[in-house]
Image 1 (cartoon, rainbow, N blue to C red):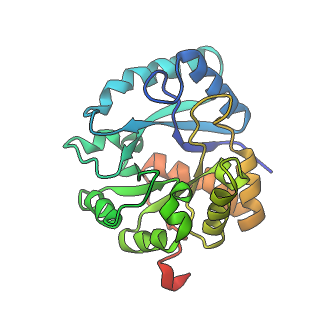
Image 2 (cartoon, rainbow, N blue to C red; image 1 turned 90 degrees about the horizontal axis):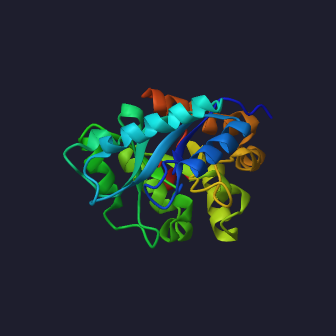
Length: 249
């Protein structure tokens, strides 16, 4: 399976910012892992919530990381982004988008899916953004009833990002079952690592792509880590193959 020039739109690679990489050494190790696995671009999606009002403060950190990677001949480019808490609506919301595009990576609570989840996404759409739902396969509400996700997609035209390790079973049988079901239904647009370190939650995605290819075929699986995320980083619109609502599933 060709595995070069992949783009990882969800990775906690910035050092000392959140529960991801703890220092520049770990960030460098994560980047080296990713490069060996075929990734060439990483979006630095730190956790962003009500305590963080200006994402631009991290731009110098991204620049220093890129300089370090170049100095060590690690063929990875890190671009800005964020994983924003659902409902987070600062005035400078554009500073939290992926690489200055109109795409926003949005995380719902791990415990449940709020009843007004679609309204939260619509608030971003109304401001001219295109939301991407982060790892819905790990949300208990969606695991019990995937139609909740299909409904959100139908109502908001949001995109869906599934974690590569979810497909392999790293996070458990139930999460794997949900991830694979979403793939079968065509409700996945992007695979990403959601990496936090270089030991357990790593930026390696090859196993997840291989597992996804057994469900949707190799060409489609590669699109989820190559063509589609590259379009997001470039700010290009593209046609989603989303499952449009429960009635279509």
